[in-house]
Amino acid sequence: MNEILLVAGMAAVTFAVRYIPLVITGRIDLPERAFRVLRYVPVAVLTAITVPAMLMPTGELQIGPGNAYLVGGLAAIAAAWWSKKLLPTIVIGMAVFAAWRLLVA
Amino acid sequence: MVAQTSAGRTLLAGVRDTLPLMLGAAPFGAIFGALAVTGGLSPGAALGMSLFVYAGSSQFIAAGLIAESVSLGLIVLTTFVVNLRHALYGASLGPHLKHLPQTWQLPLAFTLTDETFAVTILRFTERGSRPDGHWYMLGSAAAMYINWQVWTAVGIIAGQQFEDAASLGLDFAMVVTFIGIVVPLIATRPMLISALVAGSSAVLLNDLPNRTGLLVAALLGIAAGAAAEALWPGEDAAADE
Image (cartoon, rainbow over all chains, first blue to last red; front, side):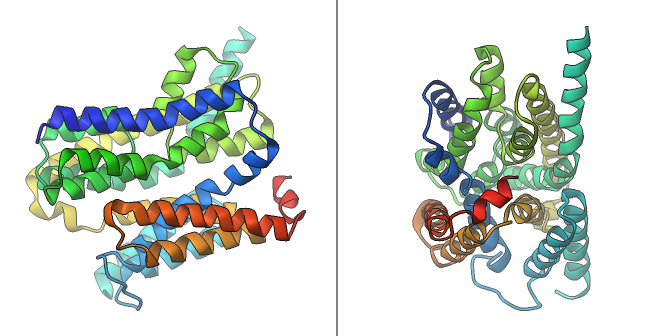
């Protein structure tokens, strides 16, 4: 595979999706309704990435105590819910995941 | 002089608020570097991807596709789909950054990630973006960018030394980072519905080709949130305070 072409292609599409909408909404005023809808985007997209990573880390559904991704993820959700802060969420989630993987799974 | 000092302070505030997310990105960057070189990418191309593409989850997915010998065109297309969410981040930030010259807009767009978006939009919502909010965003973006390069390099070196580096489960760092970003955002019933619909659809649609299930699930989640907001008007206003 041509690696330079690969990196250039990935860089071009990624920059385009980041830059073009930013400039467009800076020039035309979007209706207030559009911004209300936009507020759901991060929640929907990041949840759609995260839930399969927790429930199917190997590509197949794996619900039970043998799945450290699920146990660590639930611990992180609890920590995030309780603390509303990033640092405890990340530290507790990674610690529970690592310990569970080592000791149980 | 006063403006300079205030800009510097705002820049440091952006760095400070991004520190927890840098902790999450560290193992994630390392696992990308390790996966990329064990999957067949050269160390230069792996680092080049972090320097020029700079989009963690799509780099991670690309490394997996390279290991499976997927064609170049399909990898670029998948990258586009996985990164489409940044279009909506850019659209949300555009009105806050429109007064800036291209010398600001270009680098801020280039370094726009989930993490920088999350801390920046929170700051802009709470305190507004004028006069120096772009310095805040620059601080967050620069800290994340440098952090990502360093940890990618660590992963590349580890991946070349130990075959097993890719199987340590460091990809869990992405899960925990995204949980830390999303859970505090779920403050209203429509937000919760949006997350539940997106998450369950993503599991059900996981087998669709080229990660298109992710995009469809996200669109379903956005539509569900907007529909729920129409059902319970006013609930959401409370979260904006």
